[in-house]
Length: 271
Length: 219
Image (tube, rainbow over all chains, first blue to last red):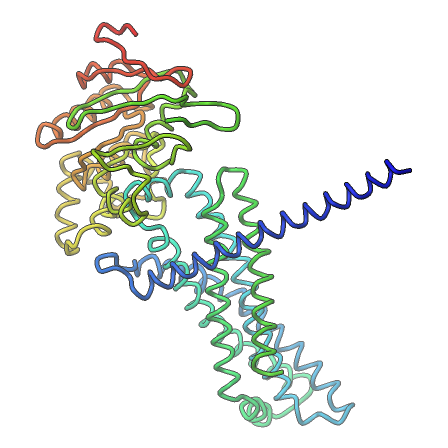
């Protein structure tokens, strides 16, 4: 009986130890990501003299992350606008709040869904691709070659991704918001028969500068987070087997971080 | 220096000295750790034990920033070329110049075009690495390694996987370059023909130990 009790204690201690090790590992990863973020901001703001940020690299990132994602953002934005408008216009009058569908549109799309859906699309497309690309660069020794040439990896790889991701996310989110409102407008005309002027005026009346500011601020933070998390995991893919794992970690890490930031900002600005 | 993966010791408390301005070739069986040795000497891999000295400077005792700037003195040709895949041949060769020098874009263009012409690969300037043959990639890698006129040149299998004539041309180009200025060259290769062409001593890496081979090819 005593031996059995000892085994349970030992097992319990092992579980605690494993959890502790896992927690410590995550703390180390988080710290390393913050260090990478710090280095990136330093390289961006105080980019040393000759080491100009490659605008070509930034534009490539914007092209891939932003321009190429317009089609999927159009579909998601349109459907989102349609769903929210139908739900708002069919259910809100039942509780006597039919007047407020413009506010709901702004709260749902511009404050929350716009930044979040846009970041999800960017995480799935560009964050994953970025982690895989950098991971493959590591495996094919391109990263080693850059280090060998004395090229600062943060400056050469992370900064263009960082800038490109933020710019793309802001542009995509504005586009998402517009498309979602257009989707809502179309369905309100077709199905619920709300006049064009009323729909637009209610949405415009409901928007505040804070909404737009917070939305852009969220995009900046989301873009920065996705770039840093994806670059970090890509840079730490030690071999071919680690590349898919890096992609998976980049996607999951970015989603969790984005959600956490979203919650914090929503509490900070609106609670 | 000592280096290994898990229980396998590739370098077992062994050392290598290359006098300034000289050429040395390291050979040995596949998997003996030659490429790792080259990367350690180039400061790309940190050995868990031992020191890497460039002149009097211990490479791993200086700040990362200084180490980064010291690497501008180095040219490295990887066996798999390691060309940056999203850059053209021109941009690959221009990268160290853009990064380390204050040259204008026009001056960089002039310098890179001169290098491309010298190597006879000017027609490749706009191509990306995936469009190149093995030999073309090797020429590009050599051009990139030499563009900064390095004091230290590391060549990992410079003739591996390309036809012998092209291999000889690459080696002669490096010899010509070395005649123009002081350059220390460390080569890793399986081919004794490389040592003969370069007229250099050969070190053998086997079982984690380095031993010098005499000119007759005896250890």
